[in-house]
Image (cartoon, rainbow, N blue to C red; front, top):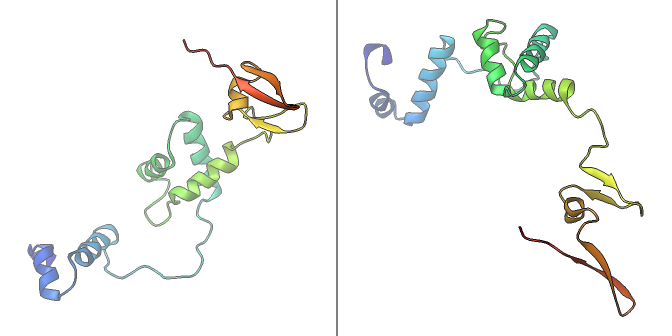
Length: 151
């Protein structure tokens, strides 16, 4: 019907299905050349082949600010994958995390204080450090006051 120029809204009324259903089927036909649904269930094979993983790493080295979806688009554009074999954005992100992920467990964000407590840079203690903290004894309990100087 769509080949004959009938609009999707007319098709949906005639077939008594939603406009979204017709759009989805037409889109699937444009992408695959078939209106048959994809496989349901089962497990997918490993998505990124070693060659594709190397390309993903190469793209990321060339442009460290490149997003996973941009890498996916480039794999398609450069012909390294086709629509059926291109890895998902999450698979590409996983490859990047494994290859370029956090290398050190002790990051600058996490520091140990002398008493063994962990303090993070994004905590008030981590931001101010020892600046701005002074102990004020009150009734046997030591309380800390934070002196902030406004510029």
